Image 1 (cartoon, rainbow, N blue to C red):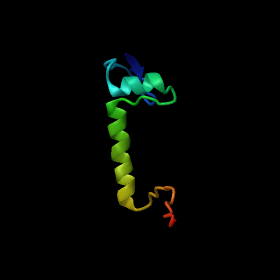
Image 2 (cartoon, rainbow, N blue to C red; image 1 turned 90 degrees about the vertical axis):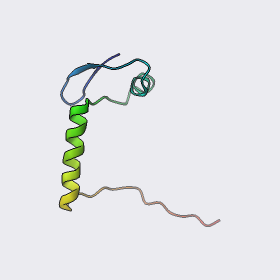
Image 3 (cartoon, rainbow, N blue to C red; image 1 turned 60 degrees about the horizontal axis):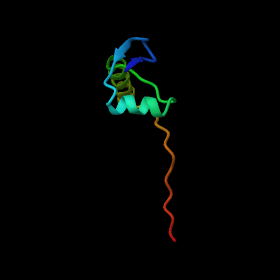
Image 4 (cartoon, rainbow, N blue to C red; image 1 turned 135 degrees about the vertical axis):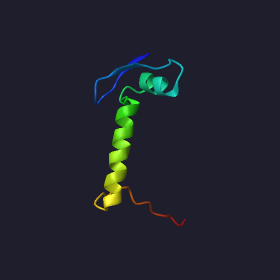
Length: 66
């Protein structure tokens, strides 16, 4: 299966039987990022977390007592 990276527009081939290919076929809203872009984003995110200015907003989980 030929896929195109969302960020750098690099075209790559992935196996048709892989989980990534299946996810892209069944749910078209998912996008593909090449490994280079994925590593770059991961590295920059870790750098921002280390500065202390990065806030990750997650939904607060409440415990229900019933």
